[in-house]
Image 1 (cartoon, rainbow, N blue to C red):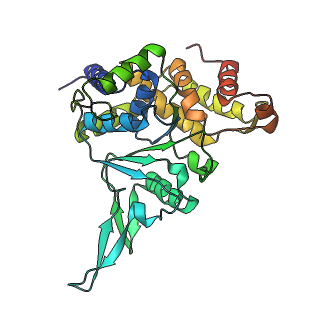
Image 2: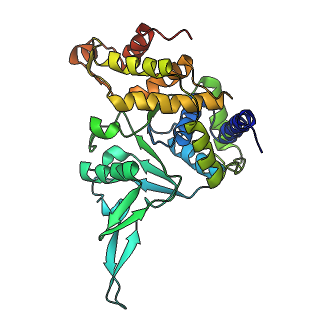
Length: 324
């Protein structure tokens, strides 16, 4: 029987292997890959933001291949209805009875591509599923397969024909992950991979081999949930969140879900490091992706050119971390 220490060590090795496996397809973006894995193991959902062509879809495809999970992609459009996601009932011509047709949400890894292009009613249908892990169709409550993990993407530069997610809906995402432009060396590598013996534009996934299965992912989620978090570390996370509510330049601070997200994500950071306890540095490491979508900047801060990153960094630096 494995000891707790050996369980933690083995879990850290599995997560390191998963990160390396995804790296076989995803050039660079190590921080992005790490944050996606954190979201998965914390049993949350992630919102990925980045301009077109930076590999958002590739990242999800590589993740699904490495995890051996059922995968579905939904391209959100302005005319999409909630039933296009959750499913609907049709009349069977043979039996003259209603038959349930399940929508693409009945999967384990769902890519909600350009979620902000769908109207609010459709966005809400997905976000309700993310919270409840079930769908009600014609009076029947249908549970989603586990694990269930949503990666939603949005383009930050195109606003025409989009419906921005309200703050209350953004709050449902554990992390907001930003994909930035690659470095020069990484971009050269991307071009070489895409153009060498390749007839299309997609980066190859042949080197991405399955490394984790459904039961292993669920086991890792349970191990992460058992990570020890001292009361003073929880207090530190709460004080950071409360500081966002009074910080100059922030019009709307983070709610209690922000502190919950900090602790849940920090548990996985500790697990990835091979520890069974969370440190204040683990909280700091996830503060930006866990809180950036939970605050709103004041108009004067926007006029001054201040960014969410600048303000959150200042907030975290202003809060004293526990010494023990």
